[in-house]
Length: 395
Image (tube, rainbow, N blue to C red; front, side):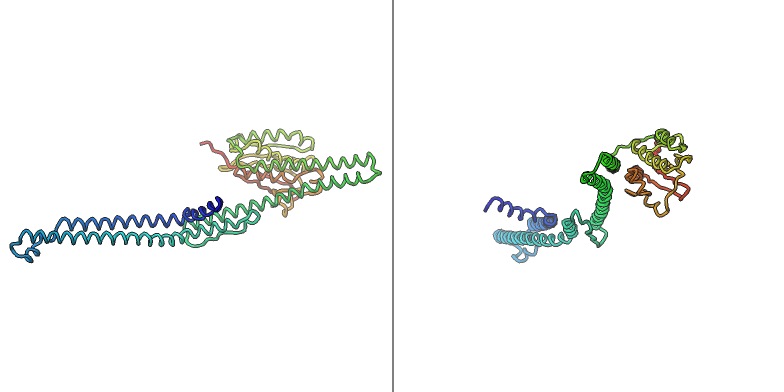
């Protein structure tokens, strides 16, 4: 027999012995055997002590049997006989005790094996389901049922974990499909224009210049998309460090950064910010989220209109709102504005190279800080986007 075969045999022999069921059965048998051994030993010691402490030959009934004046020889003979009887009784008691303990150990081992099999059966079911689960199919569930014991709680926890994993994987698949679709369009435009110019022998400098301009716009779109994808992936990380900060200064600085852009667009940018807005967060991420809202608000606003940035707090939450006087959002689209790759005016968005991730990043930043992002909009009047964050109270 080869070394591999020997190891395989030893592994098959060792695996049952290393199982929880085997250890439970052995522990049950050892404990029951120990209790029985103590009980039998105590009985044996008590019987032996009684027989040794009070020989029956000293009782008056034996004196009557041998007469009023027993001789020394008769008394000695009775005592020797009684001791022989006692020794035989103790020997038989020892034999019966050892046999009883051996039978009890084997019986307790078999009973413990059966009972432990009933106890660990839910674990076998959990293990079987876990082995059948694949990375591409997380639809299986344990659904253990039965009384609400520890195994039921373990199975329910495992099912909840599978639900979360299934949701996360499904979102990842959708994200990859959406990102691939968004990147495929500019690549297709770029390749088509280059193929047309390269395959036409009559193409001149103007044709190549036009194709180059199309390629420049396509690469600009892809560059913007890649940058936003990297930002989106960055804010998905759970290990981002956050500290207590004054959000009022972040809002004031960000509004100041967009003053020139608003003036160029002919938009009146105003701010109403409370003196102190204490939150726990990442100032860079919060500035980026507010910048996305301001950029969108200025873009959709006509010259001569205004954009108002307001920030304040109540007892529990701190809020930042950006209100514009743009065209507003259709009621059917309000619930989709924070979704990935949503763009209200699709042709215009693609023409200007927008990725459709700006508002998704805003929502991600808000939720990553324990808050949320909301929107209120009326067609023809304007929209108000608000970031809500938990207020930090220094104890």
